[in-house]
Length: 272
Image (cartoon, rainbow, N blue to C red):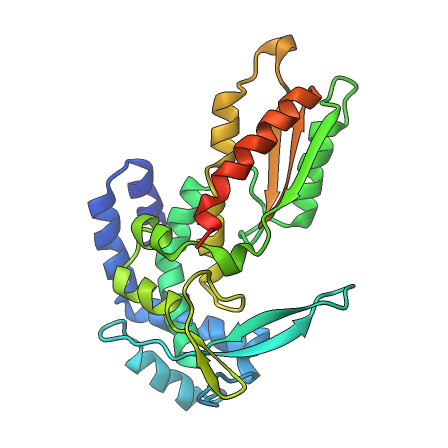
């Protein structure tokens, strides 16, 4: 079914994509897979605000049978703070309930083939069969020759997950809007207080990395259209992204500064 969705996207048949997404999210086997995914990962013993865990076969099958997007209302996330590796600074993490994780996993199955089909070619973060090693290899290929670009623009999009514009997501992400709204507007509980979410996607949500990647897709295409390769006189612009971190190469300081100005304007999608 995911293959059929990807093929429909490539043919630009979006009505067909929508029908296939509906069939997938209502499939018994997709629901089995969604529950399996959330009960096999590292967080399976970490409950959300309802303290519910699915550790037995009976609990898992019961979850499959009641899993549905019809009338779905997401529960607030449990907010915790975890220490960044190698840093003293802590970052917020939202822990959904098991049911919300399963719903996110189910709808992620229908969104992943679209995200993969339209993704930037040199995007490596949060994607199947891609890793930091692949990103490093691509950077090496861009810089290892004597004729390679001599200028590098390095950047990251500050607070990307926390600032993605909800209206942009609701307008541009091809999935059930009522379900997406629930994912985005669930809010979070911290110190017994309910806090609304007006922007961003929670770090910890299964669907969040997909939404973040889809928000940032398009930068590479924009740069390649503005700086096409032209033989020896090529501006040598290469773009490599891993999640919200990226580098851009250029053959001159002037080109690098031009690109910087372009990228400052582009991330308006990540402004609430």
